[in-house]
Length: 114
Length: 115
Image (cartoon, rainbow over all chains, first blue to last red; front, side, top):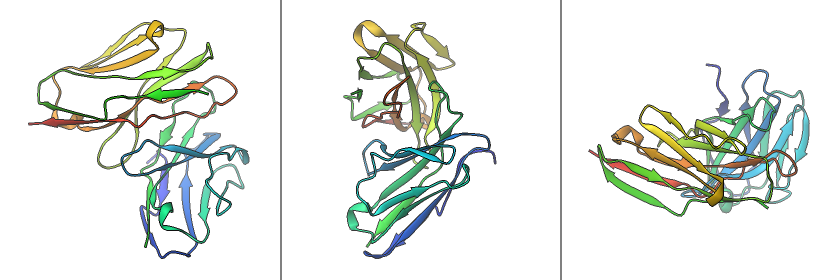
């Protein structure tokens, strides 16, 4: 389809493992956002890209979280040395880049750290 | 800083009832954008509507209607004759036109429609 694609859909990691979450945005969308959603909560902003430039990473909770979008298309969110508090759904969204453009979200990756 | 408040944590109705979801926002900016999203149990956030701060015209789309009132900083969403398929969590994020342009979400309102 032509929507935002995220993989894997589910990820179980043992505490201390590194994980990589992938986001494939809608073709042509210059803006890409990562959000974290805990159970029963709204999405919380993590980081934002415009093309390949990471313009805002103020929401990343610690230096264990790292995101990249090297060619301005696919993005990867990496979490090093996972902790139990990292368990959440990680949502990726893309938009055309204008402020009034809606974000289009993927299905998310549910990360469970055991 | 901008903020969105959805005071209703959970609403439970019986099918065919009308239901209104409240959304109150805070911002000092004069230009901003408000959205409504639906998040069904499958998890994907589905875009429903966008409203610009300079356009207070209300909108109706089938069973859905939206009431935007700048005077009370509210952007409420009404579902007429609710259906079981309307059961979901609903969010109304706010996005500014400059400065912090990151869409800000509230906690959402969980709507449960019983058959």
